[in-house]
Length: 449
Image (cartoon, rainbow, N blue to C red):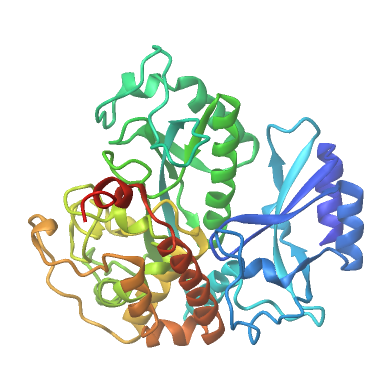
């Protein structure tokens, strides 16, 4: 491994390396090292990081009563870079590379609760049955004016015309042109970093963009989404604005999603198992849908992980409120796009852009896997507006965590320790949020109740 990394680094004249690990929330943590020191540390297994980074909350705190999972003594973990993830990190003054690492104990045991390991665990379930998942994420985000005071609402930035967008402009080419410089910069950096993005469009919200990734290996795509977020934020700052993947950054604008297209191939033949030889929906396809419909509402925090995530999932806001499914029906949580039999796939429209890509993809794949293995039968598909059907997704993080704690089938596959750690982190974040008195309370209750 060290030889291949050294060769890659030498050929490109890299002088610094960012060694990245995604934490439970998908926040990038790690170390920046001179290239020579990085290679020496990998060779000698001295590239280490405290285990506690996998238990830190979004507020920088740590949950209680998890010492059986992350010991209080906070031992070092050895970082083992994945050579397939190394790529040029554009935009730095000195030639820099990104590389994503996995964490191991000093006796060589992988940290089972790490999000990247959770996705690997799910992919191993598929591999044992001779199946290979293929995914294609679609990630939405907003450009917003710089906001240095958290008490003030976000607003769209000024475009090339000198004016800010004030209304919805879905697929608007003129609107897209307002941010042409930023978009071209993003494309340039993604090409240098070898991120396999396809198209970028202007989404429904003011200064809201969406990028589509070319379909491929689930782990590789999760890695790319992780790095894409970093690159987009960096580019936006260079242009004097913020880029945010918050699920619902502005109350009067649609939320941002991370739709996940998914299909399953038979490894031996490359055949899409969602289709029969004569081009019809297969029984496995229907069982996969059934697994998503039955189990995804139980593990909502894995793809809607924050208190803000649930502000996005409201009726008639381009975000689902249930797990109805239907052909080419964007009101459904589970949409079946128009496609040929070899490309038959399911679009999971539930995840928000704020979700950890490893856990969002893993949750979708494991629910579909359980559906296929247990030969579940799906509810009837619908042709009308799914917003007219009953809500089946939780309305708040608190309600979602309650369901999550009882998701026995998924828990059995993802692991007791991961479920307990994830729950503890989210419970701590929820407590911190509920301890804050909001401006709404001061506005409407201070002098009236």
